[in-house]
Structure formats: C-alpha cells, structure tokens
Image (cartoon, rainbow, N blue to C red; front, side, top):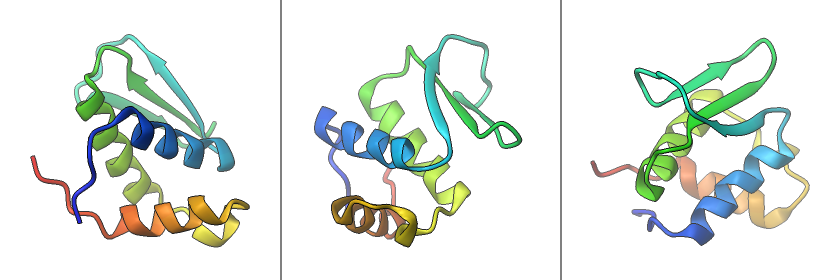
Length: 92
C-alpha cells in the first residue's frame, strides 16, 4: 500500500510521536539527511522547510528505524496506523 501525502496523514504520523517517548520538532538546520535523531534525549528534529511529501517520507523512515511497539500506543487507531506504516513501501 502506498501512503498519500496529505496533511491528515502527516497529522496521524505526528500523533504517533506524541504518544511515544520521542519529542518531534521542526527546525531549520544543515541536516545532510534532512533530519536528526538524538536518541539519548529522545528528540527527532525535522527540517522545517521540507515539503509535505518530504516530511511524510522522512517521518515514515524514522518510524521504521526507531521500531516502536504498537501495543504501547493507547489509541487503537494509532496502533493500526503504525502497523500499516510498517508495511508501507515508499516510492521515491
């Protein structure tokens, strides 16, 4: 399944971070990959000048890298959406 690049899907992905231990921030910076993960402090920083498509793709990549446990999400919709994202193949 391919995910659509919409503000609604971006909001859903951001809600996954809101329920996790990680804090998601959008800031400017010179990121070679467009983002920075500070694992010790559990902060994810995304380039705020990214397009909607860039933000969605980057956040999905980060979610796959961090390997959250879907059972830790209190909201059932977030659990289902996270599982769906884990199975998503990005088309660049």
